Length: 221
Image 1 (cartoon, one colour):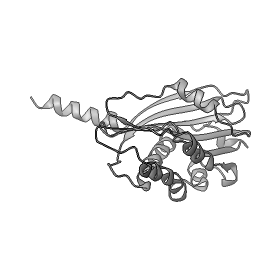
Image 2 (image 1 turned 180 degrees about the vertical axis):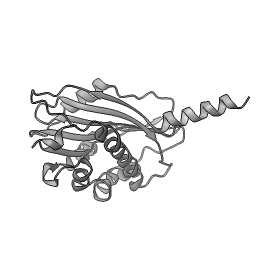
Image 3 (image 1 turned 90 degrees about the vertical axis):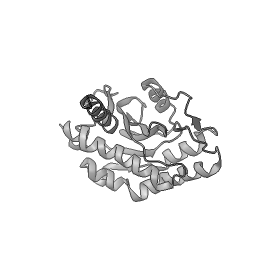
Image 4 (image 1 turned 90 degrees about the horizontal axis):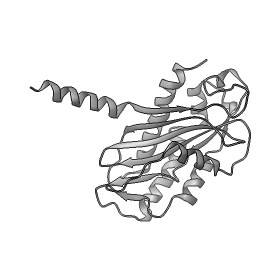
């Protein structure tokens, strides 16, 4: 009588800890370059860091809409780059020479500073969901210029009731802003009611490392 509930719980845990939806789109140019043969080309990769301008927290608890939590988030982005994901670390994980990575991590921070709305903490009953077309339109608003491929991490939401994080990892053509490849990840949430700056970075690191250890290395040309 207890076998079915146990199996159900087991498969629910698997779904929570390892779900992602990969969306691979054709490159914007005709060179045939993809994220999976980047190592074998001279293509540069611009690392834009973490763009939290679309990020929301959903909670069934009373989390104040004050500047304190916003400050923690804004401090958490450079903390993440200093202690978890420098451009040198990213290059090492991707198997690239560090000179191939153009670090523009201030861009993601500035996006967050200027575009994160005042009311970004939502009640648990409010629906919030980013679709593929939302991300495509958002990337098109980027004003940064350059050539080659760019990478940005776009956190979507932390649902503190479901204990889940939703985030997008996006590769795109820096000149045209056309998407090359993107992935929406659902990962376990570890934030509490009083998060510190390091809490955010730990979860962002998990998303990038999971992609590199999984999808990226399995598909290397």
